[in-house]
Image 1 (tube, rainbow, N blue to C red):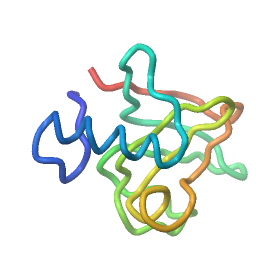
Image 2: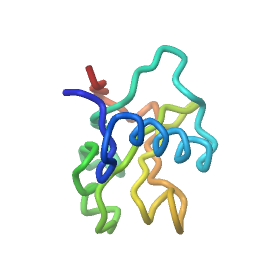
Image 3: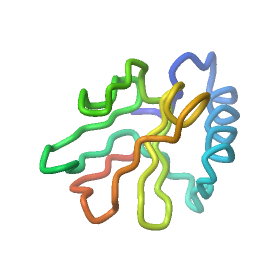
Length: 105
């Protein structure tokens, strides 16, 4: 699947939004231009799946779709409009609990 950010009108706008979110949540920019499309991890014993353009797992009580996922030092930051972009901190997934990462093509 090609890289996208929900609601972005084109790839250039998607890149710009992605970079802005990364800066806002203090995420490093990928050194190899890999963008995460989907993340599978466990949270309190429950398998969770976070995918760009879809709602986060119900356990996080977020009602807006995932816009970006960033790999940071020992944690992944899953950002929705409300969690990570506008109001609250992003959803966090410890690197130790991550089972699988899927990247955009």
